[in-house]
Image (cartoon, rainbow, N blue to C red; front, side, top):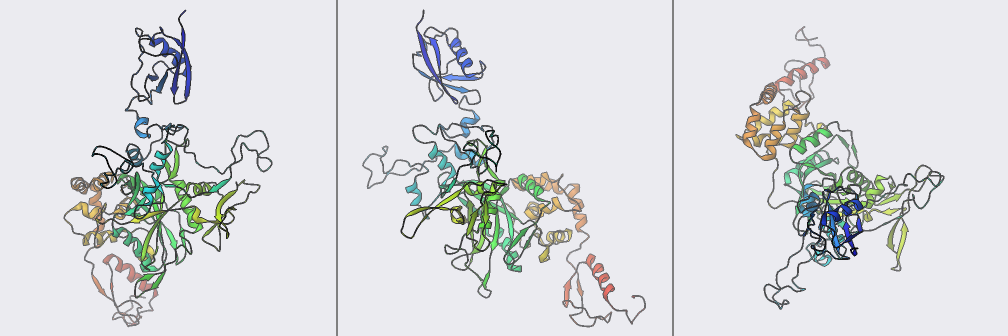
Length: 616
């Protein structure tokens, strides 16, 4: 009888031992492997080496002895979805990382790109410290890992948080190559399905009870930089505050790109700001329901953009003559209030970061928060933030509340009969210099905040055209800036560029063409959006010759331009036609179509005319 040998076979699910003989054929051995792992005969591949070389084929002519497979050897099994160097899993996951639970999740393009990059920090040969030749390496010039803290701390300015992909490389480094690492989301809820006791509040056990949370400074961040493409995008958003003194809110639309100043970093580039319906005062903001939200996201996607964050103003004028604003957000007060942290956490939960390395298919978020506020020089500054994954979990499970009279403090809810809330702690230093653990009631919100640098490029980028007379921004009726065909006719008459693409490449104009109630073009504007996205003038001219644009031009022709000037009596003066005083500006610009409506309104309020008997 042939001598039995044991062959170890390693798969993504673990290692199993297969009993075989030296004279056994490769085909017979592979059948045993398929039976042991529960695969079909062609549902996997077995290799002699870990790097997928030396594949063992189902041959009836080759024995294990001929293949030089001995007792105790370790072979490597890869399912068909993981086999081969061109596999989707192999190219999208870092080398050596074992994927748990969600391999079919489609990650963002920037994540797929960065996962394939080397990421190491290469250094040139130091002429003073390096004592080797040009082809050698030593501790002074060997490439650094992207998560090297000393390198990040010596950057200008220093970087406190490594990038998310650098954090993944740190987890997957070492001898085990991250074999037992999984990116798990925090849960503050009781696990369902525990049958050993009555449901809460009548019973709870260690199996279903969520763990206590100790808040720590997050070592990584999902976005490393926020960049506005040009100053015009930000200035038009700030115009609302300049004209009203009220705070304002907007959604940032742009794209995620590589941030080359930080190893494996991600940048959120802002191309446009959409302003939803809202009610703003000097010290508050209230968001209203937006019936156009889904349409805006759809149009942005066709333009190659996505919602990357939100922005709000916190500006108080200090000296109107100098144009300065109050410096109110600093280390002595707060950077984000507890209400703003909760709002940011809610937004981030609604826009999760798709990640195939997490059992849930998502981990954290790339959604950013931008604040327009006063800086140390009393000028308007833009600050960027995110909240930590711990804050996202507390907000998602409704465990965090704001403090009414202290914006820099939050409050962890206490358990009630309706909801169990795990204990939340944070570490502090007492007056004697000792590190102590405090219950998060109340909680300093700086434990939840991650700061992000916010910049403007030296060479501005323009996804959309810039005009001296831009099209009005949506939902600014309080300023008298309305989006209608009258404003469209005004815009077209003042922008006489011979390049139609430059005229039509305005984010707010494109939204108006799709969402207006008179003639919405949602079903027929795809060609124009593609022309704007690719900067293709030929496509734009093709769309211009369509029936839809001809109809829009016909609607705009109802408002002739340049607009006629109509003489109107001054405030408190007697009209030359009628005896009623007119409390209006001496000269007002009225379109011909609006003059009849204005005249009808005056007829309703004016006393009977003594000059004639026809206007009673």
